[in-house]
Image (tube, rainbow, N blue to C red; front, side, top):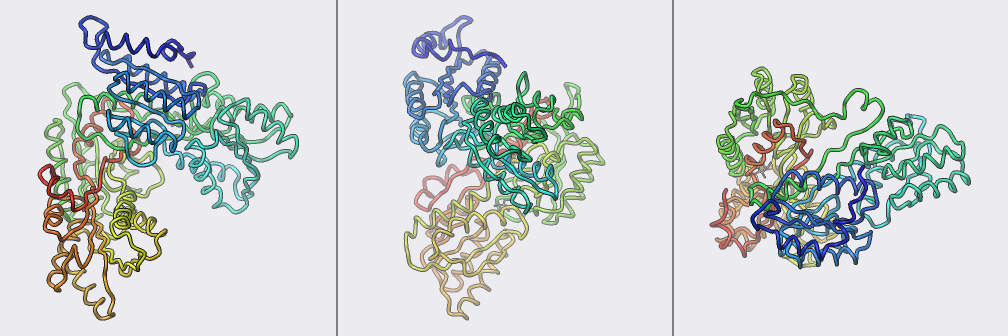
Length: 619
Ligand code: AHR
C-alpha cells in the first residue's frame, strides 16, 4: 500500500486555480475534464486503496485531472468539501459519503448541477447518476454462512466487532450476518463491540472483553483491520483457537489476503473499492455514452487459505482471441409476451449488429425447456459467450454448470435466476424489480392520499418469474405500513395483453357476484393493464377514473392510454439492454473485470407528464 499523497489533499484552492489555467490550453499539461473526489476519510487502509485505484486509473487517461478532498470522518467537513469542489467548476463529482442521511441534501445539490457517482455508500433517494459499490448485506450474509459452516452442528459463541456507528455498511453487514447465523439455532452472538473500523481500537476493546469473559469460538469483525486487532488481543492474552473472520480482502502487506495466508485470520471477504470502475464510468458519463446504469454491484469473494491456493480468487481466464476475431454470442430469449419483450429483442439484435458481434438468437416461446435447449445448442456450437433472460427463476443450475464446464462465460440479462453459486455467470444486468413494486405502491399512496379502505386488484406476471415475484414483494412491502390498502384479488395474466383482458373479465364478474368494489388495479406490466382496461370498458367502467391503474414498463401504448385518461401511472422498466450487454461482452472478452450486478436507470411516469414525454419514448 502506498503512503498518502498529501500534496493533492492540502492545497485544494491553489490546485484548482492551476487546473483552471491548464484546462484545454494547448501543450502537454492540457486536459478536458476535472473530476472532484470527495472521500469520507483517508485513514482506513481500504479508503487509501480506493484513492490509489482512482489515481492509477486516472493516470491511464491523459485528458483527466482528479482533485481529492478528505473529510476526516466529518459530515460538516464533507458538505463543505462538496461546495468547494462545485464552486471550482469540476465536471463530475465522485463521492463516498461519510453518512448517507447527512450528505444526501448536498449530493442532491451537486446532482442538479453535474453528474454524480456515489462510491461504496448510497444516499436517501435517487438523486445521483450512478452508484458503484458492494452489497454490504450480502457480504454480511456470506460471512454468516461461512461462520455457520465453520461452527457446524455444534454451534458456538460469536463476538461481532462493528465499524463506526452510523456508517451505512455497519447496519447492512450486521443484518446480513445475523440473518445467516440465525438459521442455525445453536449459534449465539454474545456481544457486539464498536471499534470504528480501527485496528488499535479493536485490540483494546477485545483485550478488556476477553480478559473479563474468556474465550469465544468466533470473532467476526466488519473489516480486516479490526479483525487483525482482535487477533492481536487474543494472542497477547495467550488465548488460542479463536477463529477470526474479517471483510475487505485487500492485497499487499497487512492486507486481509496476507493475514489469511499467515493464518492470522481464518477467512475474509473481498470488498472491492470500485475506484477503478468509478473513473472508467466517469469518462463514459462525460462522453455522454448511452446505457449508463443506475447501480453497479461489485463482486465479493471468500478468501481462505484454500481459495488462495486453488486460484479461485484469480479472475476467470479469458480466451486469447485473434485481433480480427468476431465474437459469437448465443442469446436465449423468453418469448414475445409483451411490447417490452419485443423492444428488448430489437435492442439486442440492433446492438449486436452495431457492435460487430455475431448473434445466434433463439426464441424460447415462453418455455424454459426451449431456453435450456437453446443454451445447450450454444454450448455444442462452442459460441464465445452465452446470454439469456430467465423465463422463471429456478431450474437453471444444471445447464449453467454445463456452460461453466465448457468454459463459456454466461451473462444474465433482465430476469435473474435463484442459483446460489454466483460464479456460474459473469454479470446480471437489468432492472430492480423490487424497487419497481415499491415505486408503484409509493406513487399510489401519495396519489390517493386517503385513510379510507382501498381495494386493490393485482395482475401478476408469469408465475415463478423474477419480475412477478419481486414486484409483488416490493409493492406489499410498502403497503404494509398502510393497512387501509388491501389486495383483494391477485391473479396472473402471464404478462400478455390478451390474458390480462381475459383475467380481468373473470375478476370483474367474481367481484360483482360478491358485491365487492375494485378501487385500484396494480398490473405487473403495461400490456396486462391495457388488456384489463379493455375488459373494464366492456363492462361499462371508466378505467383511470372509476379504477385507478398503475402498471410497470412505460411502453408507448401506456403513454397513449395515460393521455386518453385511462391509465394513471407507469413505472419504467427499460428493455433497452442491448447496448449494455454488448459493451459488457466486449469489455469482458478484452480482459476487464465486470460487476456482478448492473442495475438499469429508471423513473416513474404519472399521467400528468405523458403528453410531454411520449415523443421521447424509444419503445
Ligand atoms: O422481465 C421484464 C418483464 O417481462 C416486463 O416487465 C414484462 O413486460 C415482460 O414481458
